[in-house]
Amino acid sequence: MAKGLPKSFKKALWVYHCNSGSCNGCDIEIIAALCPRYDVERFGIRLVGSPRHADVLLVTGPVTRQMVDKVKRVYEQMPDPKAVICVGNCGNTGDVFYESYNLVGPISNIIPVDVHVVGCPPRPEAIINAVAKAWVKLETLEAEKR
Amino acid sequence: MKKKESVKTTTKTTYQIPIGPIHPALKEPVMFEFEIDGERIIDVDVSLGHVHRGIEWAGMQRNPVQILYLAERICGICSYSHPIAFARAVENACDIEVPERAEYLRVIHGELERICSHILWAGVAAHEIGFDTVLFLTWEMREKALDLTEYLTGNRVTKAIIMIGGVRRDITSDMVPKVQETLKYFKDNFEKLRHIFLDDKTVRLRSQGCGVLTYDDALKLCAIGPTTRASGVKKDVRVDQAYAAYGDLDIDYMTPDVLTGEVNGDVYDRIIVRLLEVKQSIDLIEQCLDKMPSGDILSEPKIPKLLARVKKTAGEGIGRHEAPRGEVIHYVKFDGENDNPYTWKARAPTYNNILPWIPMLKGEQIADIPIVAASTDPCISCTNRVTIVDNDKNSRYILNREELHRMSIEKTRRLMK
Ligand code: SF4
Image 1: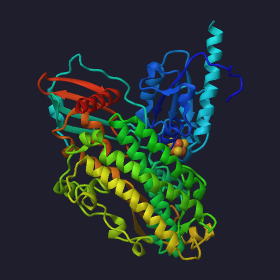
Image 2 (image 1 turned 180 degrees about the vertical axis):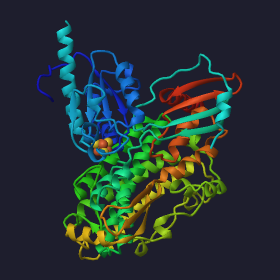
Image 3 (image 1 turned 120 degrees about the horizontal axis):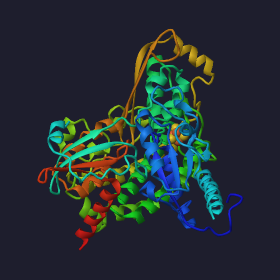
Image 4 (image 1 turned 60 degrees about the vertical axis):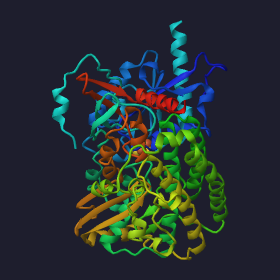
C-alpha cells in the first residue's frame, strides 16, 4: 500500500467510474480489480452508481467531443473533498488516438487530475495502487480541514 | 428505426429524472428511447455515437503495421478480432501468404478470446438479473483465461500478437502443458457453469420465452454471431469461409437444437449457444495443439520489406473473422503510391445486432430490458439510460440504469415467490 497511509482508514472509499469514450480495455480491468482475484472490496473500496455518493472519480477514455460536458457535470456533482484518477494512456495523452479530430482530451484539460495511471490498459494492481494514492490525498485534505 | 414524432407529441411533465448520462460498470455511452404502455414496451429507439474517436480517419494517416495497434483499440474486449480481420484484409490486398503454423496459432488465440469473452458475458448476464454471486464466480474463471493469455502473448487485454503475414509469438512445446492445464480447468468447471445457467430455476424463469427473435427476423435484420444462431440461422464465418486453419478442424454451427432439440430464439437459447461455444472453443484449441505443423510463424519478418510491398500494391482487400459477438469485416484499399491505406473501413458485429433489439424488446416488460439487451452481448454496451414514454399518462421520464437494474431484480424476486 502507498506510503503515508495510516494503519486504519477513517472511512471506506467509494469510487465512481466514468467512461468518456474508452475502448473498454481499462473498464474491464477496473471491474477485474473488484472481482475475486483482486477483491478491493475487502479494503472498503466500492463502485457506486452515482457521482453524488463518490469520493474518487475514475475516468477512462480520451474524452470525445460528445462527452466533454458530461464528464464535467459528473465532476461537479461529486461532493468535496474529492480526488480524480485518470486510468489508461488514452486519457493521459491521447494514446493511439492522439491526432483524431473528435477528441478534446487529455482529461487533465477538462478536469483536474490527481493521479495518472499509465498503461494501455494498466494492470489491476496499478489501479489499486492509484486508488490508495488518492486515499492519501483525501486523508490529508480531511486532516487540514480539522 | 422509430418514429421520432411520437415522442415529440407527448408533453414533458415533472417526471423527468435526469441522473448521469454516463454510468458505471462496463457499459459504454449509448442512449435508448423506449415507448411504453403501462409495463409493456411499444417502441424502441437507439442513439449512438458517443464513443466516436475517428479511428478510421486516423488509420488513413498511418501504415498497416501501426494500424494494427489502432485496430486493437477499437474495442478492448475484441482486441484480437479487429487486428486479425485487418491483417487478413491487408494480406488479401497484397497477396501475402501466411505460414501454416501461424494459421493454427491464429485459431488458438481467436478461440481463447472467445472463451474469455463468453465467460465475461455470462457474468454480465447474471448481474443483469440480480445474480451477483455468479458474476464473481465467472470472473474468477475468466482470470484463468487471462493468465493464459498473458502467458502466451505477454499482455492481459491488448494482446499485440497479430502481425501482417503471421503472428508475433510462437507456442513452443514447453508452453503446451500450461495451455492444457488451463483447458482442463475450464473443462472441470464447465459443468458447474452449465448447471447454474441451464438448470437453475431463477435463470430459466427470467430467460425462457423472453426477448424472442424469430428465424425470419434474424434473417431480415442480418443478425450475426450467437444472436442469430440462437434463432436457428446457420451462419458462422468459421464454417462458411473456413479461413485460417478452420478448414482442417472439426467444427460445426452451434445452434440450440444441438442440446435441446428445439429452437425458440429466446434469451435462454442465446445462453445455450454461448455455453456450447465455450465447449467448442476448448475442443478447437485441443485439436490445434494436436495437429499444428512445425515451421515459420511469420512470412516476412523484416518490416521495411513488408511495407515496401504494401507501398507497391494498388488494390483492395477484405478480411472477415468470426469474433465472439459475430462476424467482423475490415475493408482496405491501397493506391499503389503510399503505404497508408487510401480507405479503411471496419464493421463491428454489434452494428448488426442492435436492430434485432427492436423485435426482441417489443411487448416485453421494462424489467426485462437489461437482460434482453445484454443477451446480444452488445459491445457499445447496454442500457445507458432509458427514456420512458408512457402512453396512458402522456408523460415522459427518464430511468437510469440503477433503477432498471433494481426493477430487474424485483422481477426475479416476484417470479420466485
Ligand atoms: S488506455 Fe488503452 S486500453 Fe485503456 S481505454 Fe485507452 S486505448 Fe483502451
